[in-house]
Image (cartoon, rainbow, N blue to C red; front, side, top):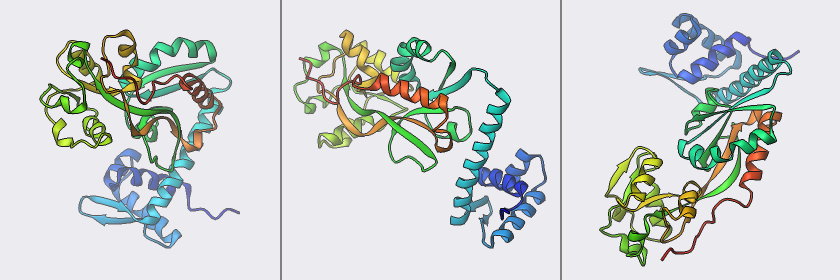
Length: 301
């Protein structure tokens, strides 16, 4: 016989560990604060160790509590998915893929018709999002993000190495012979990736302080439009500006430099083997294979 604590206690713990506040967990579960406290005391007694450290603003997890949080999250997620699949029967698979809007618009959507031909039994919905919380809260089934050092609950498969570089119209590029020539030029930034200029500068051994000034835009698409209008020199991932470079609308005077991260296909580790997600990942890998823009491109003169 399995020696496990009561399932209800684990369910309450799962909510409390996510909220880090017993009152918020009680509201989510439609029970009282005292009921949550009682269940947590019972669970801690069963395990023989503290799971939470109480403080004025709520609670925080102990090392044991963090271990149990990860295990309970994975277990409940797997149960939820299994029940959903059984309830759905043999209907077509529906998946929601999240990614930054710039990635969806510039890379994925132009290729989406090919996915529908390759996987007619998968109904793929797209959602703009850019953090792992969307996976953990089950708002999406998979994510495409640029990053590295993923949490252990995440299964991440690299699609492209991320590379960034300055982009502008040819008229501005004609006056740029070396990166130092950017001094005093109008620079364009995005609020979603404020670290882009400093990262690029660091790859060339340049001081980041020289790349702070300039206009800031909420989204990459707005910054690229400003760059194409001649308002300044923007900076963008090679992958997401490839169409503008190929069309000649923008040029990359110094090419693109690897930034130490990659665009990765991310799912919860407990779901990585699901047929629908495996099919989606394989299609993305096939599309990405050998077709991403190079890390360095020739100077545009």
